[in-house]
Image 1: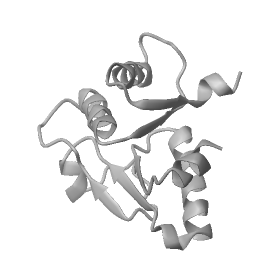
Image 2: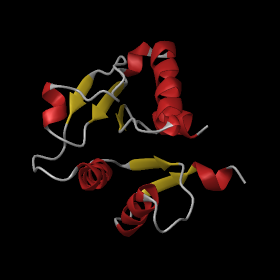
Image 3: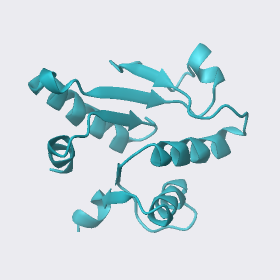
Image 4: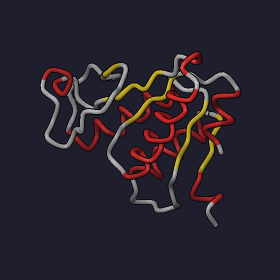
Length: 131
């Protein structure tokens, strides 16, 4: 599995946006790995799209056992735009990016995927391994 490989390669910090079932699945897998190997000190960080969400988390946020909450953006944006720029910031701060995204031009996830490709990040698109 890709998360096992990432941990074996030294990844210890996992960033989450938390707006999809894919995020929930990865969170559950990382949490299980963290419990199995506490010596790795794995960190799960939730990244909000808007800074105000740090003060008062929105209704859609499900509080889990994250080690930290952050907002990589300090600008105020429209909510949908801020999600894209939050994702871009998360990619900029990452060595490996796991996606589950299909090629659909109108998809925010696909636009974020295209940014990761252009940024020459190490990418694993699990949607491609599903087929």
